[in-house]
Every structure is written in C-alpha cells, then in structure tokens.
Image 1 (cartoon, rainbow over the protein chains, first blue to last red):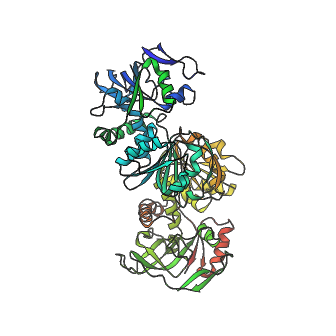
Image 2 (image 1 turned 90 degrees about the vertical axis):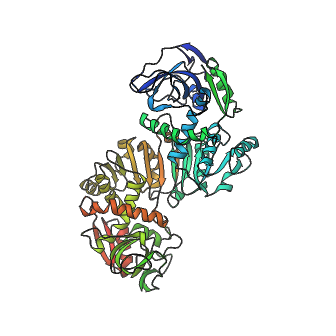
Image 3 (image 1 turned 135 degrees about the horizontal axis):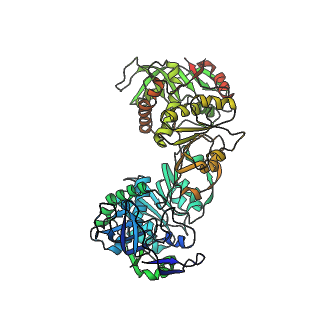
Length: 318
Length: 318
C-alpha cells in the first residue's frame, strides 16, 4: 500500500508517499481502507521527534481517519461499514489497523472527510472536559488558546454543557470567533493578564501552555478547581506555590489521549459517541473542515497547519 | 461553660480554662455535652496562628469530640444519644454545637474517649484514600510519615482495601510499628532515597510533606498515579517538572477536611461510617488512645504531642 514515510528523521517535512506493507491485524482489530485522515499538531510534533508513537503502535503518522471497513478480522463489525477511527498512529496511509473499541459511526449527515476532522478533537475535548473534569452546568471554565482547533471545539462543548466560558487568545480576530461560538469572557493575553479578570473564579481550566501559565492558572482556580494540562507549549519546568492547594482543594492533572490503553480508549470513544456526536448532529457543536490535501501532499498540509492561519481541521484525502 | 481559651496569641501554650458562653444552635445543629476531645496537630497549628478556623466556625480549639446530645435543636436526633463529632472547631469545651451531618455513632465496643480519638483521623484518611484517590485492591500506595497518627491509621485502611503499602519514616522503631500494622515496604528516609526504591511504581501517594517531596513524589508515581497532599511540613514553594505528567496522566491534588462545606462533610462522614467504622469494629484497623489529660491541661497535651513521642491520639477529658 501507499503511505507517508518520513525519509529523514532530522527533516520534519521530508514526507514522501512510498510503498509499505499493509498492516497485519491483531485480535480485536479491523482493517480500514482510509478515505480521509485528519492532520493534527501531534503529527507535526512526531515529525520533529517530539511525540513518538506509544509502544506497539504504527510508526506511520496520523491520529485519526475515516474510511470503510475492508476486513473485520475476528470482530463483529461488517465489511463495507463506513467508520471514523481514533488512532495511536497509522492514519497517513491507504489502510490502517484499528482496535474495534476505537471505531466510531459517522455523525448523521457527516461525510468521511468531515468525520476524519472531528474524531481526535472530539475525543480529546470530551475526555478532558466531560470525563476528567466533570464540567457541568453553572460552572466556569477557562479555555486557553480559544482560537485553536481544540479551543474552538471545547468552547462549544462547554456551552452545550451549560458552563460559562472564558477564553484567552492572541488576537481580536480569534476572540471574535470565540465570541461567535458562545464564549462569555474574552481575554487577549497580549494586552491583559488573565489573572486580573479571573482570579479565584474558575472551576475548570483546560490548558495547552503548561509551565508558563502554571502559577497564573492556580491563582484563577476557585475552590475544588481543576487544572487539566493537555499541552506544554509554554514549557515544562515551573515554580509552584502549593500553599493555596490545600485550603482550596485544587487538582492539577496532566492527560494525553494517545498513550492510554485500549480499555481506556474504548471507554472514551463510547462516551464521546454518546455525548458529543449528538452535539455535532444537532448543530450545537460545529467544526470546520478547513481544507483538504491529497495524501501525497502531507508536507504541504503540515506547513499550512504550522502557519497558524488554519481555523479548522485539515484533512488528507486518499 | 468552661472552655480552653488562648490568652496570648503570641504564646501557643497560653491555654487556660475560662468561662465562655454556651454556643447558640443554628438550624440543623445539635448541642453536644463534650466528654472527650481529641488532640490534633491542627490544634497546635491553630495556637501558632497557622491554621485559623474557617469563617463561621467556633474560635475555640478542637477538631473532634465525643459526648452526649444535650439539645437536639430542630433535628431528628434524640437527646441523650452518645455521639462522635467531626468539628470545624470548638471541641476543647464543655459544650459544642455540631451540624447534624457531622455526628457519628460510636463504633461498637468503643468508649467515648476512644471514639474522640478516631473521628478526625478516620474521616481524613477515608476522604483521601477512599474517596479522592479511590484506592483499591492490587494498587500500591506510598504513605509518608508512616509512624504518625495519620500514617498508622492509613496503613491499616490501605491494607484493609487490599493495597500494597510502602511507608517512609525516620527511625527503625517507627518502621517496625509500620511493619506490625501491615506495611509491605519500609523506607528510612534518613538512610535511603525513597525514589530509588519506588520509582514509577506508586498508584497513590498520601503526602504530609509538600514542597520538599514534590519532585520525588512525581517520580514515584505510576501511570494514572495520584499524589494527594494533605500537609506541608516540608514547605510550600517548589520546582516542578511537568514533563512526565501528560504521558503518565498524573494528578496532584491538595485537600483539607476542615474548610469543606457542610454537604461535603456530611458525605465524608456518612462514607466513613459506612466504610471505616466496620474496620474498627472487627479489628482490621486499630487506633491507640495514647493517653488522656483533663481539659484544663490542654497545654500539657500539646507539649506531649509536639514531643514526637506520641504513637496514638491524645484525648482531653471533660
């Protein structure tokens, strides 16, 4: 089969379409003929050597895809079924082996391309806001990077849950988008310290920054507040003052989706289908397919995502 | 009524028995005639100005007591019932007003003095190991300060839950006690770095040290590990490396019991009665009453606890 291969580990954009073996199925896996593969920041990090696939996963890039079941293996799935796939790797290819617990139906009305664009972000946002943080009506959530792919999705899920949403972003244009998606409190981090506006008021914070925001985030948490860190764009080493953590009973949690075991992922996928798919189907959550590239042009898609000009998900078509 | 009053805020041991007003009942509270009041480290911290009572609580010292209901107020409790009491303050007195959700029956076979010695430690250990950390069979828990009041109780609760227990303590004598209570892995922190022995292996850590152990504790956590910090004997300001927190999905949580709201406390008390009282009644968990002092000798009891020679709870008798 054809798949994207990184020909030089030191050159992130050395992505070429080459012939590789079709993956062999393990028990509980199905073979999916890929029609569309979502492009994620994690893919770019992987080409830079910063986000290696977990043990046992394909070393081909690609964390989500959609396509048609080609071989159901020893599972009860039917050949020919259209599915979305949450992947630990392997999406940038003509075929991918998928554990059955990581298959999702297409949301009603969604194309394969549109589905490939919402699997990873949907599971990531739901596992953090819904499952880990237990966000619910009447709570206030702070979402950093409100203008990004995860941010724009998280704003809408949080609103659908009945929460009040504060966001940070680096431009008025991005903040306008956040407002259009329902965000209640808009903070341009280049002009304003978010602690001034949110001190002691946030029940949940969804953070992609890490070290740089750690002390500020702690100051923003309300009693029983929970900081969920899903990215480290602002580094990993920080000072921390634990003093407020006991009387306010604060929690700091790091999470990733990719390294979880199969049972965890199956639970997250099932809960995402149950809770987020209806939000997509009735329009409470919208997620833009920003554009498509042929699989062979993966390097160009990465360059486009890296440019910061992308406001939805890019998809590679096979 | 008589109660212990600190006559000089700058002198922790200036504790005198004086005449004060009997507390007035608020809705949902009962008046308990105190027969025994447990002595806790939090009481000593309060006399040092370091652990003030939460808003609305009595400014009299004392976090737990046992006695007889003198006035049931507007509740369904019956006058004359013997009860244990979890308190936000007020135990060092002849009478204390107690929210009804914070009353506990005496464990079968327990005296009032013995009950006054297990309420605070029982609720603290259960709320952290049982409720917050969800410790269960097959997991490994690290308990710092294994020889202390909370540590010795936590070892036994953890063993009753089927967990493997590692402890740190500062002397062979304390480690021997921990082993007698069921601890599986014994570490003298003065002679050995606990990270060397436990790196990456602990599902739960119950920590009373705070900043000084933060980085070491993070290194000891296994995937999905949870660090619960309930004390800061090693300071509050630390360096932290967030890098392992995402791939290992670690959680750091600070908790205190005293500052929780009434609903939280009622839930914890109910869960403690359900889960820990049976462990006390059938002997799976033993907790020593180290000694008793008359209420008037509270300062002597504090001095004894501060000496570090106490291996159970001290109780003031009224």
